[in-house]
Image (cartoon, rainbow, N blue to C red; front, side):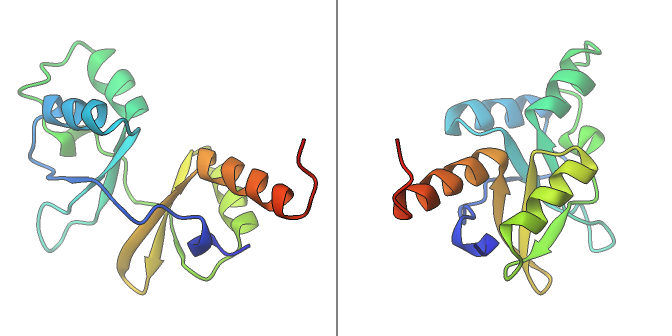
Length: 134
């Protein structure tokens, strides 16, 4: 199965100079676990801020969530794979880098995201289609 068959195309983004508090609000409101962080300037690269980043790097260190900027705790660089790659390749990268999501690219454009939950869901769908359901 190709990665673009299971990716989430709607990416939620946030500016690097936004307060971490705004990231928390957006994640809770949208019920998501990560946000794509836009580059702060033309020399910067996109990053990702996750629930793990917020809990470990901000809350766990008692940082002021209104003063700490998203860019200060963003994980970079993104692990990004081409839209035509197999799901197994994405899983291998997640394992190798101990991450729970990979971004999907079409050239230099980020077009989607795949998480561990997406991989599990795809496997269930695949098995149901093959007649191996419960």
